[in-house]
Length: 450
Ligand code: NDP
Picture 1: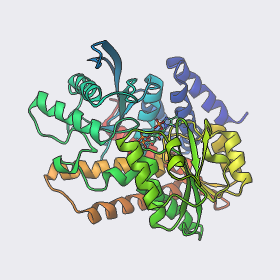
Picture 2 (picture 1 turned 180 degrees about the horizontal axis):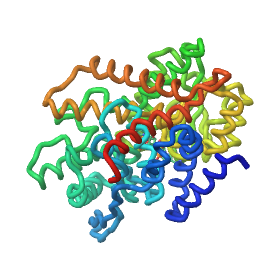
Picture 3 (picture 1 turned 135 degrees about the vertical axis):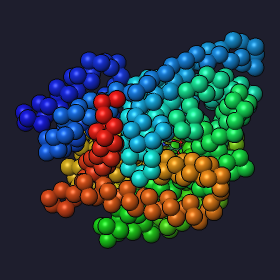
Picture 4 (picture 1 turned 90 degrees about the horizontal axis):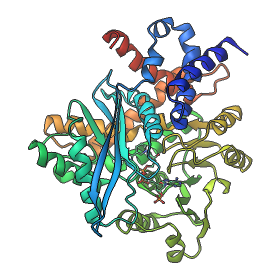
């Protein structure tokens, strides 16, 4: 066993001893440790001051009770969380997730990833994440509003425009952000940019809704440019059917690529003719307004197929964009993709690829970008929303979109700088981890042992 591997193992033993029942968090830390520990051997100041270990310990992890009453008059309780992971380079920033699977492990993994991602954006954003095990599926509008109000009644004690600025994530879209913002304003009496992803009418930024999906495609375009390839005419697999998936498909259409799949937790649809703009509008209406299921797509477009309980990775395509959730693409899927000739995998979701599948892509020299780099356009545009709120100004669509493009290009270039291997292959995992680590680590070194 190499010395690096021994160091990685003993570091992981330490983190595991402190958080033994947090598999997703440990998975995210291990992936970072594998690239950062060898880097620290050559850059000893980070090792001397224990920067990586400090980055694994949240500055603060808050859990709280969220009481609400359902439409039948039942008294209900959910658990609320906010993980304030790292504020070295700016106020904590990261989304809120409402999903029954939410627990401390998932939110700590997301907050940890967020620290690196936000470090990559070039903006002054610390890292955090929060949410609740509340399941919005099947709930009435009144129930969702009541839940959001109760959640914010507690959360507002811990957030602020210069303290911690949450946004949306799975299960928290524009509607929920509106209810959360309304309650914050009602309790505090202050009109402040304390949340991002707000409606355009009340302080939101143009392009924020589209930013994560658009950014993923801008990033993949940079990767392809570097490899003398392009999106035009390419067949793409997209998973998920929420915010990130929808705007990934929209931007792929802008670049004349053809997305042929979408999915939800019930299964995936395969549309060999491609998901065009009219079909995409149908999906937006189905998922955002009617909160429907992807199985309804084939009722409307019978030439498409629905595969219940399956993911799209067995379909032949040039590129894959996993945009649903963590660990949705495993080693078997990775092998299937490579066997079918896929040349690139660009993550829209956070940690959608299992570690053995990531390793397989690297081994096969497949172009692969981790979510913390390729989906950073969402939080970057949240940073632009904060800047507009502070200025009390509203930038045009083009201005925000151009800034988003520039940021994705800068993130890409930074990954290349730190991830270039001797044979010219770009290890985007290594590049993203080191670039994010150096930015946050240097700020921590300057600020002392706090
Ligand atoms: P949405 O809630 O809008 O959509 C989530 C989608 O993923 C839905 O189609 C949902 O299906 C599907 N999904 C959720 N859980 C599972 C599961 N266990 N198995 C299969 N499908 C599942 O969320 P977003 O689009 O905002 O987020 C998607 C991913 O992107 C997440 O990993 C999120 O953390 C990440 N992300 C989001 C950003 C943003 O700006 N929104 C920014 C950066 C990253 P169903 O309808 O059945 O629940």
